[in-house]
Image (cartoon, rainbow over all chains, first blue to last red):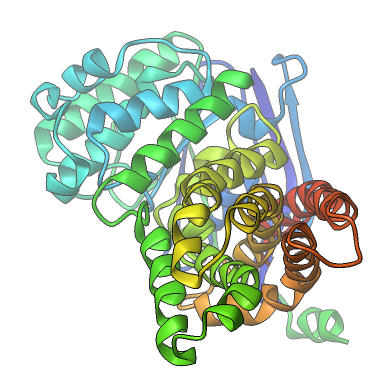
Length: 212
Length: 222
């Protein structure tokens, strides 16, 4: 699949967060989104995943037939979408049935992330890093071409970070796309970098005009 | 698409049965209200059996509110709602699946338990059956109307009270026709079928409007 974004702008609570964001990704490409805290990295990912309406700009998608952008992507972020009272296996099985396009079984996916023993444990018993790895295992149970990762290495130990880098490389080798918002250098070879700058640089007159 | 909807219903039923779920809570709350009324009114069996259907209905409306505030809020807080947005099913179907699961864990047990709880308010056999039937036909409307309020307050912390204030007025028509159908069964000038048909119509309208409205409220929270 191909994804191209033109002139994207985001406004939250009446304040312009960023504007003029543009990038294009083809099969196997990766994009590292960087910027200071509050610059709008998570907002950019929220717009892409269809949770936030863009203020301006265009998102074009090709090569996936009728599917919409939210149906082509996996999003792993701060809110991990796991139910604490269900086991890791139940959580992943639910995601697989809900999202469709099944690939590996929950047990195999957890095994790839070194959490095979947690299959039958309620997620409430797991640590922050282990929860994050269960959420990342969701990337493996369903095949989707675009991975949106928001701070994917947060709470992960070095071994898991290496495992994640391996998964991302494998995904890209298979023609997948990765967009990751991060502060830490991710092991994304040949990735483009998109730095979101603060909109504070924008002229004040424009901001006043918007309010009028 | 069917598989995704069934997966959602199965997950919500399983969550309701686990720790922290509201599985049997609304049923217990229902029993509490119904059991309190005879203590408040005294042992006047004629009075109790006359207002019995109204008490059961009022208790059903109030206990539907239990767990309703967490219907979408729990999924919004932990990010499960984002997962559902990414599913290859329209959000309307997601809402439909979640409301079905909510009704299966609250409305259906209430309707099934109504004949038993009718004993506490001295209902006779006909009135018990009629009240259970009206609850069976009317409680889906309560769940659907409640879902709109739950979707609107999904991103508000402690939105439970706002939810009650929002949806209780909208439940009044269902309450009126539910009670009048139940009372028409045990005598009166109106035949039983007329208010029951209106009640069923209210449920169907609530199913359509509630599903669309709740999905619209969830789609663009800002």
